[in-house]
Length: 313
Ligand code: TXA
Ligand code: MG
Image 1 (tube, rainbow, N blue to C red):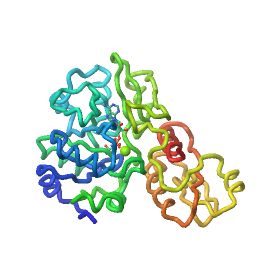
Image 2 (cartoon, rainbow, N blue to C red):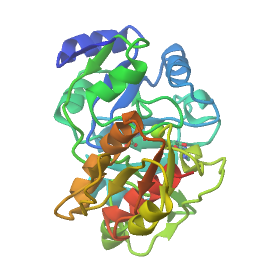
Image 3 (cartoon, rainbow, N blue to C red):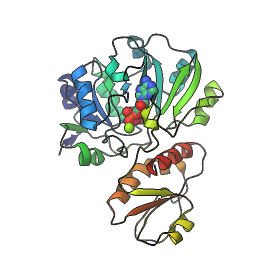
């Protein structure tokens, strides 16, 4: 088990020494290491069991520090960063050579974001390097939104988990890249498409549900619990399924023994915040299948439905 605490100085010292620390962000917990230290970056891939073809994103304290790591920043990227950083938005930008190919899996762009969490912001301010950090879960599994989630799965592989409480957003950042300065959304996430389009106009959405070498987070099966997940109309699924299912509903109470309700009052932000905890709880229940329903496909609901589809593989 890792030590869990709020000691920023301890986290800082471990990171400076090239060790890994789990850090809180507003989206999910990250498994962080010095992005400029090859051995720390290598450890991230090892601890997560992540293939090296899946690039990492780097975390900075503010927009001003991106100049050191990127060549040219499209106008639309500036507009988005100005409006939404710190926040759940990752921008794919052309990298300078100071960012090693290992971080970006050989791509010439690097994913960058400024997380909106007071502890991690303080930590980043105290460090002379950016933090590379994927979600702090074994590759392919559900992302962690509480320190205990990290500890359960990676606790014996890392020294320290910086405890920032429950992640306020609960789904990963939205990823936006640029093709000839034209914005392309690669992963639905904590910042809604509607909010992005309100700043830069229509955005091309290219969220593949198949294997895509550009962003393996888009693999069809990802963010998945161990138990099989079936997505559909819950009333019908419950009738069809003969065994003892676990139920993941948006707001309805099905009065069954094993169920999680994402938001009894039907709020999408609350549903997003509870999503990964609910999948983890259901995974531990004495059931052999998880039956789930999509949420309304607007705003944050789009990211929730994306994660539910991938959980269902
Ligand atoms: O909210 C988040 O983004 C969290 C917190 C910890 O910041 N991080 C996170 O990282 O979700 P990760 O590694 O689990 O997911 C990042 C995704 C991966 O699917 C990766 O393939 C994609 O971003 N990615 C990273 N760099 C990329 C690049 N240069 N081009 C395309 N995709 C990239
Ligand atoms: Mg991840």
